[in-house]
Length: 131
Image 1 (cartoon, rainbow, N blue to C red):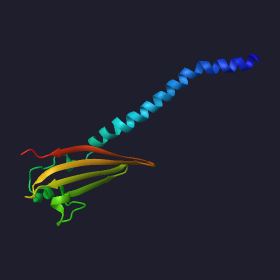
Image 2: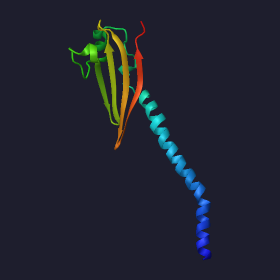
Image 3: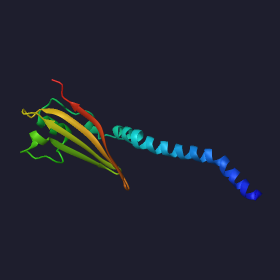
Image 4: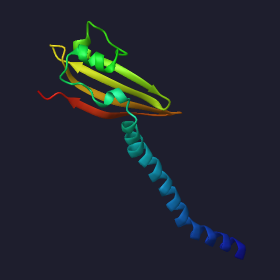
């Protein structure tokens, strides 16, 4: 009987430490998921995507960024063009939208994180051209 009480007392003493460890693990995972992964993705942007030529003609954008991954010349003004850069842990996507004069009007950079069964879509940057 004394041995059973001793075991119960041991668990009572360890319980706050186990709860603190559990909370620390959950906080670390949430911090990585919502803070560290998006910031690391911003740091690792493809080099050409750091300076997107908004306000320039479509030909200048293609000269600066290279050929788009997804582009349809019949719908480019409505749907824009999409560039994709594949990485081991996910895909970067750059979407550029044009106005009626084929001038780059807006852009959006996103990152699709993939690790095993975990995946998440992060919007890293969205800009519009100020006339």
